[in-house]
Image (cartoon, rainbow, N blue to C red; front, side, top):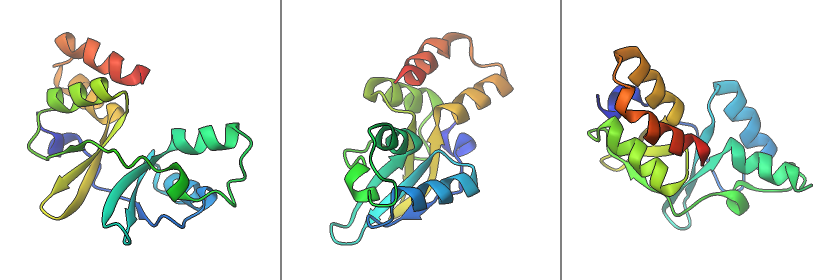
Amino acid sequence: MLVRDAMSTVVLTIGPAHTLRQAARLMSARRIGAAVVLDPDTSGLGILTERDILNSVGAGQDPDRETAHAHTTTDVVFAAPEWTLDEAANAMSRGGFRHLIVLDGEGPVGVVSVRDIVRCWLRTGAHGAREDAAAGALAG
């Protein structure tokens, strides 16, 4: 099974000036755990996850003042739609993260999460040998 079969095609793209509260509202409304942050000044893509927002709020920061820019991960590992789910799970496990931005051509076409991968493996019954990779990614 491939990343394209598991990824969510609901891609929330926000700018670096969005506040964490704005990002959280948008993510919640779409029932997704990550937003792609597009910085037009650097032409770069980053990712802001629910964990990034949680860490900020937990540290006592004001979600109405904190911007996505300050909490975006810019050292991102991207996946291709043609990657296998094993390749995606291994990349997540090695990097200690739970989301990959999926790029095809010039821009993001999806986001794949550990939850997406596990759901596909369970649906196809192909999860036996992959439990360690998924468990490692979930621990991150």
